[in-house]
Image 1 (cartoon, rainbow, N blue to C red):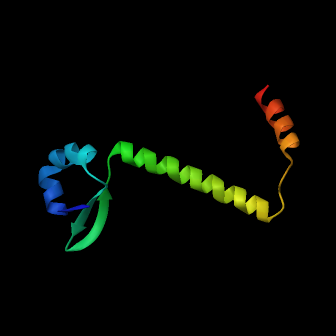
Image 2: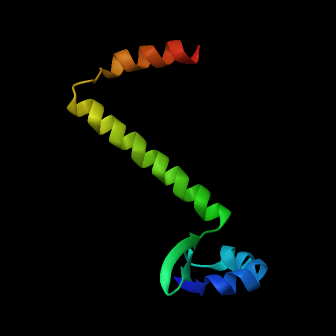
Image 3: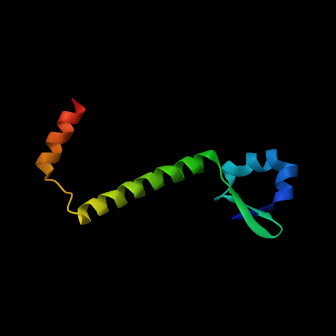
Length: 85
């Protein structure tokens, strides 16, 4: 992961942003020697959000199963058929 000073970002923002699609991960922005922010490309951000959505759905499903909120496959098929029609 590449690290840039916040002052470098101020001076070279266009160049740093243009390089994002070619980076292997986000760019860490530091301020006063400490991590301040991550700069990430749009495609990477959208992919990360998709993955997060999938993980959240899995977690909701696991919680529902733990709470006993389950249904049979036949009942699920009937619900989906009604929902899709």
